[in-house]
Image (tube, rainbow, N blue to C red; front, side, top):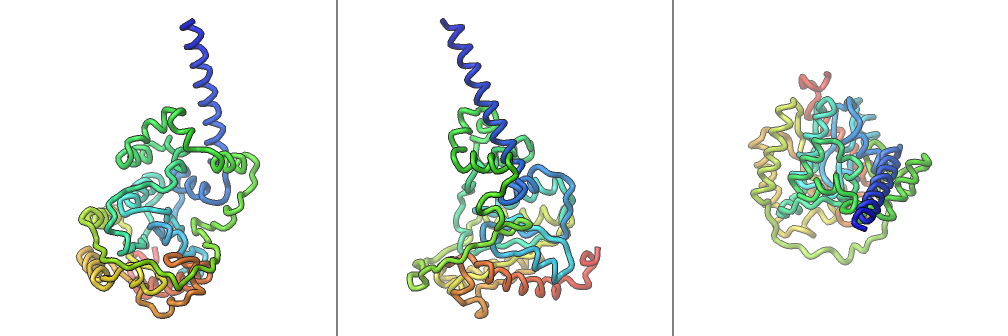
Length: 317
């Protein structure tokens, strides 16, 4: 009786492992969309870019590499990941540089209104599951969330988190058919859909701060970039209402970020003060530009980048 139970359990586990293999392999075969981006960042090797855009969803949706490349004549890629804190961005950069030549420049979008949050919560963390055979990725994620080693080895732990959406992504990969939103992503840049958000009901502003932990990870990010000979450029991209709708002490926070940039000898540009972006038609919500706004912003940052770095030794490498 016990032998039968053990046999059934072994068969059951083998079936789960086979299903998970099919699920993950299908996901990794996506040629467009977010999983194509994860393929590039965590699976492929040897890709070379002059510029990486990094940060959270505001980086992912605000920097259009096609526009940037057309102006700077460089080769860029948007490596922004939704929900990425400074710690997560640092981990992504380390993983990227372990597989690809380091970029000459890193444009890091950093938001003063989110730096009080010390939680390194991984948004949509099951997206990482198909890529955990990358030992560097697994180690970095395990440091942030101790479940990841179990997620990697135990299908009973990981599969409950990969339901309909992941099965759909796998089927799209196996069939080489892009999903509904996959075609909205190009070179890692996620086009934000237009929404008629209600600008008459802004979020309640509050006094915010930059935590010591996030400050330390910002310093570590810049230090690591220096060790791989990458120049860092800090940016706070536009916010509807010029940032005062989220932070009542915005000016103090901007001054703090300016001091951080100065102490690390890196440029910092704050676009939340720009009147040119205080237009509701440029936004999909209070914190994210739509495609029209992102293209306008990318043009502006491209010219600023050229003005700062033109003629510098790295610029023509």
